[in-house]
Image 1: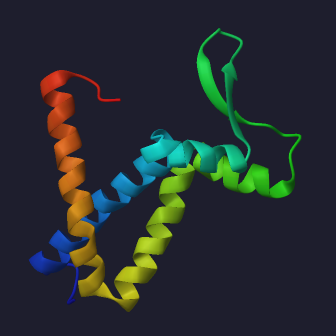
Image 2: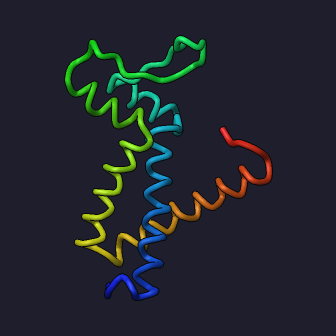
Amino acid sequence: MGGLANPEALLSIVVVAIAGWRITHFLVNEDGPFDFMDNIRTIFGVDWGYDSDHKWVSFVSPDGPWWHLFFGGILNCFYCCSFWVAIVFFVLMVLFPNMTVFLSIPLVLSSMMIWIEEKNNGESN
């Protein structure tokens, strides 16, 4: 892949970073088809309710097993989830750089379509 000064290497990093954002956004913020991700987050202890300011928020119950706190915490926090997604993408880039970039392209295209939709029509669901 060459050094980081290589334009191709920088483009690969940008492509994989945008793909990582797309995966993280899906895991943390989207319900997915047939409420797939909502059900996965529920299995890992993420629930919804009103906070003290009467805002509708997601939270992880501290009463669950340890894995609810760990995985539910990851699936409930964009920054936390993005860290773990970045580690996975980093390992994939080290082991399979060309394949990782190639498989990231549909995620980048999806991200760009979401961005265009939000800029043209306001916030998407």
